Length: 215
Image (tube, rainbow, N blue to C red; front, side, top):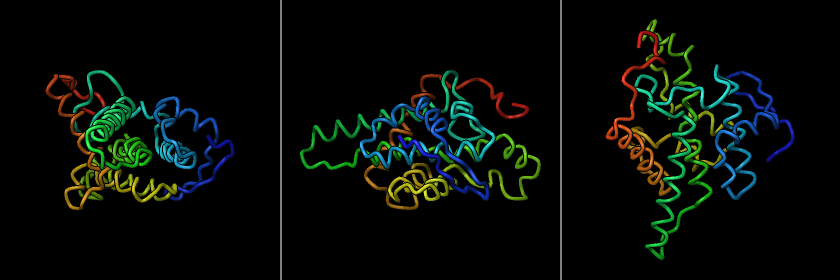
């Protein structure tokens, strides 16, 4: 993990990414340590550290644990738990296919990095300050103005993550129906959708939504 302070600019805000900020991200998502390439590993931690610093959140687990800002939250667990679970499922899918098909080739580091960053744009879509603005005047800039895949592209590219990772943040959800998904993103897409479909079938969505005012 990089020990030096890295200075980046995100939405016009100067952010100093420190070792302590990186460590806090890794503590919430230890699967970052599964990434073999050190530079990619550091950039994933930096991206999340900068994303949080540019929002009203101090940690990933402080975000509403749901798929969209206005969908029902998990009965138990956090947004970090969701991201970690999807990452672990994606890796197991790739391992299963690699064991079955001799010619199966998947970039494990990209798969892990993309899975860990697929919801990074939720720092924008789920930020209570943004949600309050949007709900006050939905026609001003939209509601939400940007979904998390769109803002995720911005964070990934700004922080220097590979195009393949930005693609996974951008197109893991419905937006991906408009493009051809990479192999790694296809695996992520189905791991992500499996997570939420199983949550629904198992009755693990909360009955009410205290995260939205009036919920």
